[in-house]
Image (tube, rainbow, N blue to C red; front, side):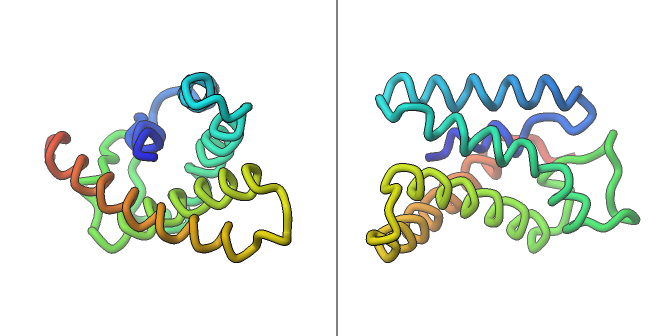
Length: 134
């Protein structure tokens, strides 16, 4: 589930409505091809909605600059916390809606953790290889 990297890399200085529309369409396109009924659209839209407040919380106001923000320019620990948190939230929503039962709580948690680990590794690898460092 590395498509959520598009939400992480979307420019901060763009309009929030553009991000929400982009995130919804991204999740909807994944749902269309995987026949999952809107689960990915809901999860992707949610992480797009909480992205900026979470980023402000992690970076604090002194570190945060809208115009120069780039995931490769901030400290690795802060980027790791940001990406890991949003990835785990996204996957938790996806698997919670997919199972939609508390009887499968351990399956939801285990699938969330395993998928999140691999997604985070691939997202960081992709960011390191395909984005420019400023």
